[in-house]
Amino acid sequence: MHSNPSPQHRRVGDSPVIKWLLIGIAIAITVGLLIIPLLVIFLEALGAGWGTLADNLLDQYTLHAIGLTLFVAALTVPLNLAFGTALAWLVTRFRFPGRKLLITLIDIPFAVSPVVAGLLYLLLYGRNGWVGSWLADQDMQLMFSWPGIVMVTVFVTCPFVARELIPLMQQQGSEEEEAGVVLGASGLRVFRTITLPNIKWALVYGVVLTNARAVGEFGAVSVVSGNIRGQTNTLPLHVELLYQDYNIVGAFASASLLAGIAVLTLVAKGLVEWRQARALNRLQTEETA
Amino acid sequence: MSIKLKGLVTGLALGASLFAQPAVSADQKLLNTSYDIARELFAAYNEQFSEYWQEKTGETLEISQSHAGSSKQAQAIIQGLKADVATFNQVTDINILHTRGNLIPENWAERLPNNSSPYYSTMAFLVRKGNPKNIENWDDLVKEDVDLVMPNPKTSGNGRYTYLAALGYAQDRFGDDQQKIDNFLQDFLGHVKVFDSGGRGATTTFIERGIGDALLTFESEVLNLADRYDNGEYEVVTPKVSFLAEFPVTWIDEYVEQNNSEELAKAYLEHLYSEDAQRLLASFNNRVHNETVKQENSDRFPEVKLMPIDEIAGSWENATKKHFASGGKLDQLQRRK
Image 1 (tube, rainbow over the protein chains, first blue to last red):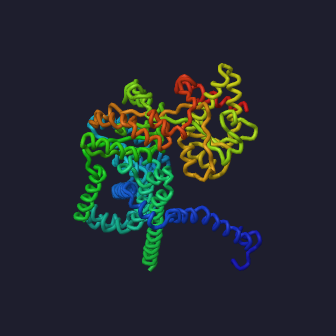
Image 2 (cartoon, one colour):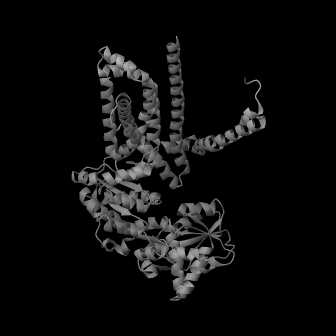
Image 3 (cartoon, rainbow over the protein chains, first blue to last red):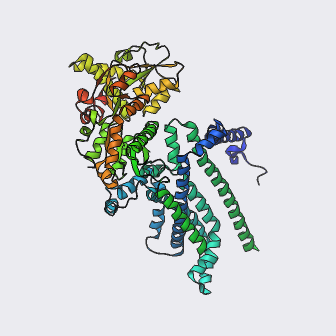
């Protein structure tokens, strides 16, 4: 059928000139906009040698920023893992009024600019906010300290896990789980022995994305952080701070850490996708067999 | 599973306690919120003050710094960032702490000498090697072939100061002749080739991109740049008349009471007026009030006529309303070009 294509069925890329032109443009854009900037980050960080890079990374405030960033991610990821799984379970396994609305609402953090999200939290939980003024009376402070940073990071990253799980769980359907229930398994057992193994890789994928975003979040955190060095300065904020100090090497040293985490994330993402595809293949061969 | 969970919870709790409390234990703590290019300055001052304080009282100090644009800092303080002191580069941003936050009294500026402004600066020009266009004062900026680079008065305090400095010069020269003042300002704005959104952006345009014959910005920034390129690539020109840019400071009454740090906060700011501190401030290219230090630095800070905001526009409020608001003088002058 394909051996003799009529002229009107020719596709855009069939002419070798156009084909290579398109490939060339795609490569040029990828190299110019993605690869070179990424390389520059590492080159600039190393521009003054390994010793300077180490000095900058071992700086007291940089170390604190790294610690705080990892700490925020360590709180955010489990919270959103639990939240995302529960939510996906709820909207794919039950039918109730407002279910579609709930699915739409999950996307709010994607739709809202992170700066706006930060401001919302500030206006609500800040000293003059509805909740914040009450908290201030109890001598409690959330904004401008690490709980505030965790709160906005949770908000910004909360759709990732749920968004990964919902399509998969919808596609898989609930027959296996229903069978389990009919055979007398408890809810928890159904979840642990049927649901969890089925969604395992999507879950890991969601966690990888959540972690990447939690580590890199700038806008929302910038609003509620208070920018106190050695206390509430996360790694992305620290990059900006060093850059404005004309400490270019220091800024790029910290930036290279963030870029390193991003590269690791991509590797992890690729690995998970590969495992997921393999699991899916096996499932299909089992079904056809 | 439960053991793992327990480990996780303990780990997180440990982490939390680590970040909730500062690593070093000091007798007293102080948080200074400041504008975003004052980091090196206050890093040096904090060290000096800590030594002074320990000598005087025997107490060790832990001084934390927060840096961002001073308007953003003012908002954060109003929303509950419990800073003990604010050291800003805009009077309006401290006023807001009273008008919107009710955190300091109305007369805050009278509580410390020199309008609570321990150091000040003015607007100056950076020109290229050998000053080829022969720029000495504001009227040289409107000569036929001169291109200027400055931050946009609409988006930057720095640019606003430069605009007001040019206005001050025109008022000083033309007196009550409003038409001549307007013509000069219009001519001046017409010579600006690039309006960058902020001070650092304007510096980049002038230095890295090589655009313009003169960069108009803070004298402290201009001197700083001349020092960084000390091969004489750039020269500093301080005009005869310019604007008095104050760097106001205050302790925040509401929070020092809660933090029990009133005495320390006051001492921290008062010490800025001491000779040692004034010398330090001058070494960061700021103009200071101490006579001895002034003498020592007289070659770097030539005598110029500095006009305060009251003289040029009545008050900051008036200046904003009349000149920088939408449809204000700045808009009108740029439109009529």
